[in-house]
Every structure is written in structure tokens, then in C-alpha cells.
Image (spheres, rainbow, N blue to C red):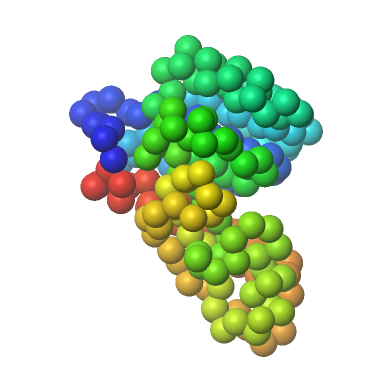
Length: 193
């Protein structure tokens, strides 16, 4: 990644749509000594996203955009990110697909975490799909974002064993625990730390 970290922490925006548990783990990670990033902005497409509470708690700027008009929302978003000198974006349960044009503005600087072992089970309902197909393992993947859904270059993956009486809920919980560890590790990896 063409981002340098001398003493400078890379200014990062985290995009969320829901509870923000990955956001919380990224904020915690950003406050550790070894972290190459600082979380400076939280963006959500959902005004009711519980994760927005972390903005207040950790005194981080936030914005909610409804994405009803994608082009307008993305243009507004790009100008907000520029104004706040955001250099990197972490998608953390963000349920909107970003356009090619938006991605081009942050080429190679948008990461996403996905709850499956990509390239298997892109998109939604990953845990259901893994269980229906009687997989022995599922897991999570951190990857770079490109214009195709869940198809960017993989940075890191973590395998999770599926037990015999696994449910969608129990698998989701197990994988989420690993997501919180994997995202920071993937960030350290791209900065060669």
C-alpha cells in the first residue's frame, strides 16, 4: 500500500450499517501503540445504526447518508472525506455497494471484512449458505475493495470449524470473534508491520 507511516497515523474512516462491533475493535486497535491508523470518521447509511454511539463515546466525527441517490450521496461523501484528510477506508458491515467512481478515488485504500472464506459465499447470508452446503469450515476474510462484490485481492483469512449442531447464530458469533482479531492483523500486514 502506498501509504507511509512515519510518526503519522493514517487517517481512517470506518463505514458501518449496524451494531459496529468491528468498528469498536478497530477503534480499540487504533489506540494501541503499534497501530498505523487512527479512526477519524464514522460513516453510516443507517441513522439507527447502534455503532454510531461509538462516535459520541470516543469523540469521533460522524455522518449519516441515506444513499437513496447513490451519486449524490457518494459525491457528498467524497467531499467530506477530502475535507477531513481521510486516507483510508475500512468497511465494517457496510450494507451498500460503492460505485466504481468512488472506489477509483481511494484505489487500493479501501478494505472490507467479509464473514466467509472468499471466494466462497460472496454477498449476504454467508452462514446459511455454508451450513446448507455442509461445509466443515467457514471463516472470515479481509480484502481490498474493487468494483466487483467481495472480489478484491485477499489480505488475510481465518478459518473457523463448523461444529455438528451449528446454527446460523452460533456460527455468526464464532466468526465475529475472529473478525475482531483479523481486521487489525490485516491492517498491520498491509503496512508491513
